[in-house]
Image (cartoon, rainbow, N blue to C red; front, side, top):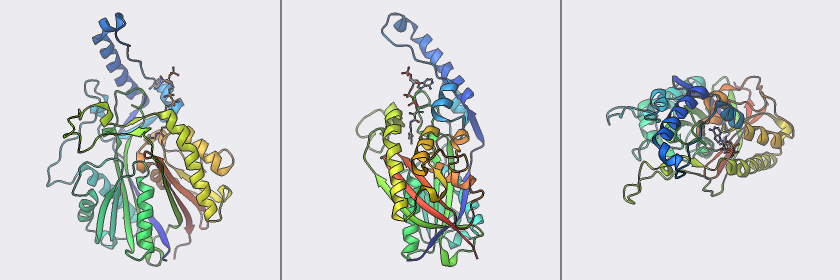
Length: 376
Ligand SMILES: CC(C)(COP(=O)(O)OP(=O)(O)OC[C@H]1O[C@@H](n2cnc3c(N)ncnc32)[C@H](O)[C@@H]1OP(=O)(O)O)[C@@H](O)C(=O)NCCC(=O)NCCS
């Protein structure tokens, strides 16, 4: 089997940012309007008034302070409360392909490879803007890459599942170089009128180049020591949007066609699952938490990350050991752990070991153990 190395990463961050105060102000304006509209029914006890949101709660409960989005204006308009993205024609690049192109170009430059060197393109993300043709095939064409491409969706775990797929394709010798891209437009599946979750997500796109070690020339290389994936069915995070909505005559705009979760249950059930996955994965490689220089965890909730890191490392994690990016980016679904890896590789020296780990709907979780290697 061929050794596989990650040789480049890229990140596309949208221009618009919304901090908690701006998000909460728009939400609370809408709540006041709704309660005024329903004043009579509320007074008569026929209806509960809607509750206000608060920045203090959001930051305390999740660690999120701000998020980047493709369109802030539509989200902050109390009459709309969803992004407004112009529809693109069939002769234009799709929005996700555009985001992917920006992140991929940066990753390819870091890896010192050309688009023509790429033989496999995987687009992995929670939501795809169309059923087909695959965004990955569109991206392959836009880049001028060779070989083949396909889309895959394992929700927040799409990046690690795609990294495993790419690693296996390279290790088995079917391709020499692969590109994994995660264009997440989470603002489009988020219900900005749901107090429990309106603050959770942001938009971003990440890209990772993987190569057979014998052809890699990048100055920074991380060997994939192993990958381990797990899934366990749960309805605690669910989105019922799908192509059957039209024929089942269900309301395509109903709130169940957006992200819905039981946050507290997710917290309780996912943390032990993830800590066990990483610990068992490390043990299978004859490693333990004490061997880790860094944990690049999925970015959904600061307290979840602290708990998982504590279980894996056996002690409270420092900012350096388990970097947090969700304060600025919020939950960017599959892009989160890769943003952490992209932005926080400082002081990782040849020989150092780290883990990229994602977790989310499914439930699904993926662990990728990496070791920095000396480049040529
Ligand atoms: C979503 C999450 C931040 C909520 O935090 P939590 O501590 O579980 O909060 P709860 O939903 O239990 O609500 C606690 C209280 O805050 C209130 N609250 C909820 N949203 C609020 C808001 N926006 N503003 C103010 N108060 C709010 C609730 O009404 C509740 O009040 P009560 O105690 O009087 O009943 C947290 O559960 C979480 O992050 N879970 C994991 C989610 C996850 O990883 N999902 C994966 C997605 S891919």
